[in-house]
Amino acid sequence: MTISGLLSYLIFFLTFAGIYAIMALGLNMQRGFAGLFNIGIAGFWAVGAYTAAILTKSPSPNHLGGFNTPIIISLLAAGIFSAILAFLIGIPTLRLREDYLGISTIGIAEIIRLIFTNEAWLSYGVRGISSIPKPFRDIFGQYYNLSFLALVLIVIAIFYYLSEKGIKSPWGRVLRAIREDEEVAKASGKNVFRYRMEALVFGAFMMGVGGALYAHFTGFISPEAFMPMQTTFIVWIMLIIGGSANNFGVLIGAVITWGIWTGTETITSMLPAQYVTQAAAFRVILIGVFLEIILLNMPDGLFPERKFKA
Amino acid sequence: MVLQLLLNGLIYGSIIALGGIGLTLIYGILNFGHFAHGDLMTLGAYLAYLFTVQLALPLPFSFVIAGLLTAATANLLDKILYKKLEGRDSVTIMISAVGAALIIRNLILMSWGPQLKFLERGIEMPLVFFDGLLRITRTQIMILILSVIFVTAVHLFLSKTKLGKAMRAMSDNTALAKITGINTERVIFWTWFMSGILTSSAGIFLAMDTHLIPEMGWNLLLPMFAAVILGGIGNPYGAIVGGLAIGISQEISTMFIAASYKPAVAFAIMILMLLVKPSGLMGKKV
Image (cartoon, rainbow over all chains, first blue to last red; front, side, top):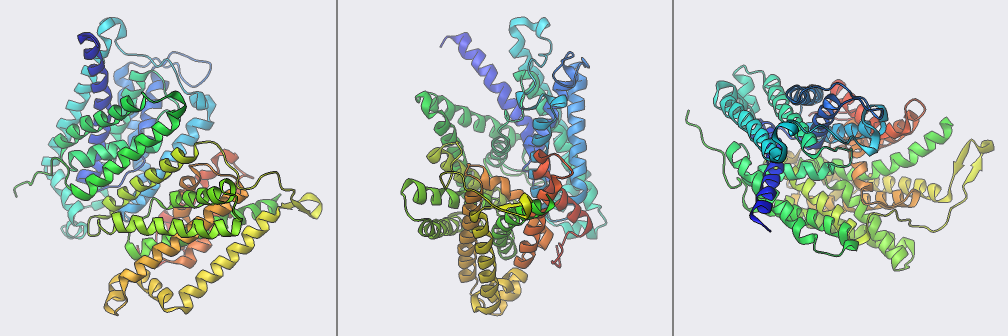
């Protein structure tokens, strides 16, 4: 492989790892800092991706669209729609034990998939939405991928800054206190439900924006393109390897996990074509076993949560 | 039409109920949602396929062996995973169960491929009643009878035997059960074992009634959880009632909404329950 080929692969790799890192930052806000159990990441991701696709595309006879929205609006709208979804799912579940949210997020991810599969007027069903606009392509031309990576990095920087700022503020202290001991937080007069809701919604906003970036970068989305459980699972592994409740660790975890995931693909792609299903299944088994080993042996991940001084 | 939907719902509900009994007992006793339960169900069904179709053994024999092997898998998961994570927060244990679910499903996908498979060859002619208003196959009648036998056996076990009573006591209040000298290790072992047998049977029933695909059990996970929550977590009788209620509502719903949204019905009922009475119809605390 030539230097420029290697370089363009690296840009491609980092862009995907970066989009996943945004999801992982969102999950870290929910799980890491607030202790919330979201296993429907793919649902929030899909809502963001479809929102962006429908808003930015030129009119199409196949599905809703034709709004020609600029990308900055589509990213914000993707985040907002995903946040609204989180808000709705939070209402019945956040007052209860963490498992209820987990079960409900599986349900919501499934329903989102059903809607995008069945409502052809909205999303063209299983055929999906293709030729989603690639922002600034005309301006950057051959440097388009590089410019997109820059956009992803900017989004990461913004979310990273906001997360860190939030978590170090009094708001973040209350959030962590609730995670550690809900009763104590309640006793000191904190509205536990509200704090949890804010973390859930903020995390979902990030996931929605991540979904929008995914849609713009790949140019094609469909209900099955996400491999829902797999996507959710990979984001979880990123969080657990990097270290729950440590934003920096989560970013490192995202790059490492994406490296392992794409690395196994490189190996299995050498197998003959008739083994393609088996190879894909084998990759998931490998990464699943990998997660269990980390869970059992490295409970805090590579970068444990920093202890804040009182 | 309604009669037929009721019958379909009853069959589907029995399958959910059988899986739900184990799910709710594990929930009550070990205090976490077992997200790999659906995939254990799939495993049972595929093992039955292996013995009945691929190795041409009699179905009753395969049924038992598949149940035992699924139970062994459930115990193995507990031994190498959940027991070792004891004491960590419940989200960690649940995500490890999600991991186990993905591993089991993909092992099945790798071994048997993604194509539809059938436990029985050929199309079975249904028995027709009331001028075609009600159609039922012999397989379905057998599923219903066996489900009733299973549920009765579970009831007798839980209410008459010492181990069964200990199971209910632990599910009710783990700390109290420990104080009264119940051998919790033994109860936990047999809970996994029984759950494995029941969920495997549910999977085989589903395979007999419809077909096998690697996602079959995963698709039932949400209805099973909905049944468990509806009946009250930790209450096996609640799970049975909840399972039947979910199964029948899903089928009846097709009179009002598109059948493709059937899976959403379980979810809607569950959310409604969480809003109105989170402890479930027959539960007490959350």
